[in-house]
Image (cartoon, rainbow, N blue to C red; front, side, top):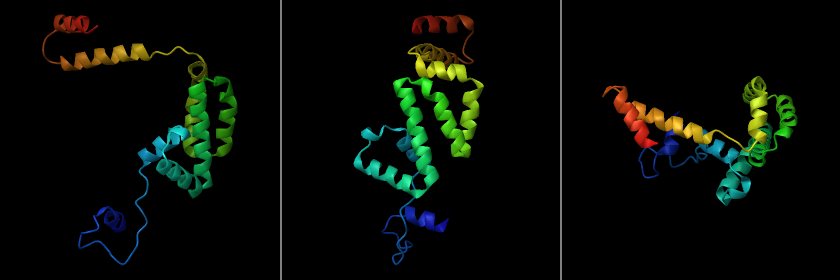
Amino acid sequence: MREHLVRRLPEGKKNAPKETKLSPAPLPSRQAIFLFLARPENLDTEEQEMVRQLRQSHPKVDLAYDLVQQFAQMLRTRTGEQLDAWLEKVRASQIREFQSFVVGIERDKAAVVAGLTLPQNNGLVEGKVNKLKLIKRMGYGRAGFPLLRQRILHAL
């Protein structure tokens, strides 16, 4: 814990060790997730280097990166017919975190395949529902239904 905190200290602090060279702070998980999900061609050279280092750190990380990129490509190109082959690769990978993802996909596979192949989505409806909930929360405790009705009609 101490070494982790010392890495975060500015170099000018009197408590910072000067004789030991610590490794750089590990990559935050959110940034690693962003790098895994991003298109490789859209990453700058520093980010590409981080991805390369992550992939070289462990064979399972490299396999996970490949699986994530394949799924993202299915989403981008709407090629849901490749889902069964991808699910088999994930099962064979024995990566625990992906196994629960596969179970969730298998539960509602028809909807996932439709989402990966059809151009229709419910994004507009979800946006309207989100706006309605926000208006409802803003009016909590103020007045009754008539004010809520007016605010919703005015917002749409």
